[in-house]
Each structure stands twice: as structure tokens, then as C-alpha cells.
Image (cartoon, rainbow, N blue to C red):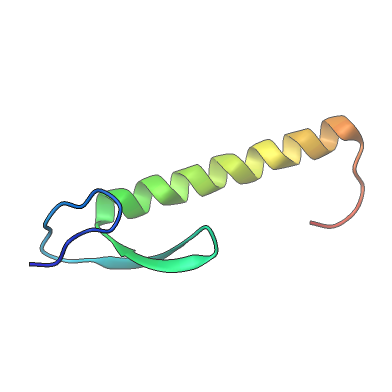
Length: 58
């Protein structure tokens, strides 16, 4: 059985997702969690740039 690289549990199927600039194979639950974390990080970066008055491109 395949093993998730994030939670290290045995799962039926792995999903390939991009995290921290690398493609990794994780279970569906971990893939959803990684996606949510990436969205939160992007939103917080946007807020910080707004507070600092940054007008450039990301």
C-alpha cells in the first residue's frame, strides 16, 4: 500500500500536489490541508503588502 509523505499513513490512493515549490504525493486529506495553508499564506502576504503600501507585482 502507498504511504502518504505528509502524515505517513497507509492509504489506498495518493494525489500529486504542489507544496513549497515541489511536487509531492500525499493522501487526499493532506492535499486539501496543504491547499488551504497555501491560500491562507497568499492572503496574509497580500494583507502585509497592503499595510506596507507595496504597489509592485508579486
